[in-house]
Image (cartoon, rainbow, N blue to C red; front, side, top):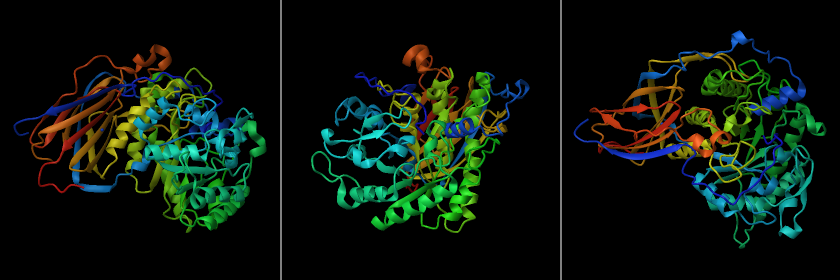
Length: 566
């Protein structure tokens, strides 16, 4: 990612990081019985690919039923004794770049971390952090980022082509991971770097060992990614273009050289499908996946995809209702691409069964329009929650990193003034949910909606306005429910399979407007109208709760004695 040319700034101010939405927590006591595509746009715009036919005005339009106000009825049936798979905390990762002192993580002109930024990272507590880009990885040379600041060298900013001193070097990155408990992920430079350079980086980190400013040993790095987005052709960097055959040859050398240094590392290759299921091209290099999978004979351990920058309205911006409906159904397009990539991997013996990693993803509406900041809205955050629910139910997903951690245009979970964006709270809630075992959930609702294709996201005829996910861990059943309906509440009955629950903890994220933006009314635009705290009523084995529009609710139910806990 990081192909958007936007400056990054910092501020000494730090807002309360408890929520860019209204975040409510209440314990209810119950008695008596009864939760790249920008990359695709880059490929399409820079290579002028055919295939993204503009829609006519008659083809736009969400199902008006989806936008109708009122109350609809829904039922969730939870099966705590039917575990599907272990919950994957590695889904709650993020990205930082080497440029601009790690997008503002470091104080200006020093190697010291900004205390406000560190506080934000500590509150987010990402499970993984990927570095040094993004596209910025394609011009980064690790030796320029070692030693004291006066000895640091310069690498080139991918977009601005200016030489910039590297302050967020490897030691700073690993120190950040160590202080937050995050697993580090490094993307090596296959565009302007060499296999020897990457192997020496791996040796320096995992064999010789990187030391912190206090002299202590910093973490080794298990996961290394061989290049960022070699399947794209950035118009402003034509000198970096390469063919699929060229990348496959380079990948061979990188894999062999790095494996020789440390056989225990997990090495991943980036892939990109020719087209999304919407028909929109994904790369100017048709056949990229097949070429790489056929020609790379060295062992690799996972593949990485950037297939979830959605919906990315390429043709034109539709009306808000249609755009919102598309964002709420966009994970269907991601599901299609993951299934297609899975099938493609399994056709090749060397890649059959290998896991996939979404090393970058984000909601994305448009680039260079008045809609740019709409990715940093409650609607964008609900898209992230919906996507993570999808990933959490798949056995073949290794990890996922949201783009990105801080600043970085409208992408950061925390902006450059250290104010949380709506996705900040969603990532925190999802991390709380992703513990123990994911268990089976059945959802029935009286309402569904249809939407036409919007940009990269395909059209679909019947999508539920609810998404639900449940997990069991440490004697607790956690249930996450997303109400995507923009104006309608749902009266939800949850059949928990638990007898006489006596206590439930409720956390809710809700917004009064799906596309409320920071520039409209400041942070207050992300807060809903005042409303009563979420109430829960119950039957013998059920819970009943009203969910407001554009909301995410996490219920934590202590399991009754006699249940086997995870």
